[in-house]
Image 1 (cartoon, rainbow, N blue to C red):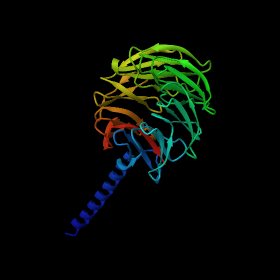
Image 2: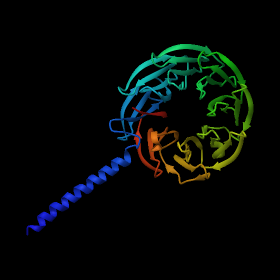
Image 3: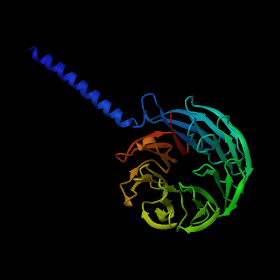
Image 4: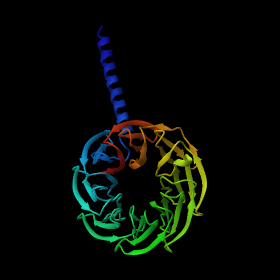
Length: 375
């Protein structure tokens, strides 16, 4: 009769051990591989209708704060060397800076009317913002949060993109259909290059020799020679590009095209569109894994993410997310893919290893952009 209590005690002990093992494994599965104990990793999602940024803890997979930054926030970026999150208020005409550790706005920096984006110098000492409404580009000292200089460019400059060597800025002037090339140190204008109608996004080869510019008013991509500071060609696509994603070695450029329901693949050595991969209804934004293996493309109309094995041009089963998915970003280590759902007001978290939806986290109203920071 004494055997059964002993067996029950052993059974309970084994069950406790089993439960602890399961809990440890689940925690290990959910905790990003790049994190050490005591290190935080958060996503920062701009909410255009609320004028806020939602902070999402990517370990606990929950929103932990809402920060008021100003009307129509956009262009959110994690600072490369400081524990800060930068972005702009398009309606307010200023850049804002969030201290990641305290979750407080530490600065609002006037940069001219209607800014949309922020870019940083390679050493993180300067930030650059184009004011599309004021026709200016401003250089900001990141340590003091003060404007060092401001210069006029063309009409409605969309953004200021720093070249990989940090020496130049490329500024697409939307209303002039030109790209201004500026000296990053002095903001002196080195050249103004005509391009396809209404330029917006810019991608630069890792060696800095060529740049590729999308055109909102044309089914073309402009290819710029950055050594000669001249237009090489306006490359026909068949429809407008909605995004540009470059392979890490610079050999290929991936261009989602909603009108053609697919992905154009551009060979950057020959400057030719070599392939088209049919993907879905309205492929809009894309995100490439660090190993160049998988390209994830959001399909805004269908509410899903389309994984593609890029080496084989092979589309994998889609992943259903929220309504109108847009911008997507990987977490460090490529453990998770984060997708902003603009119409369902949430952030989809996809486990990359299994290519499955892990959870959806409510954020603010009309989310549009996000950045990820480890600190």
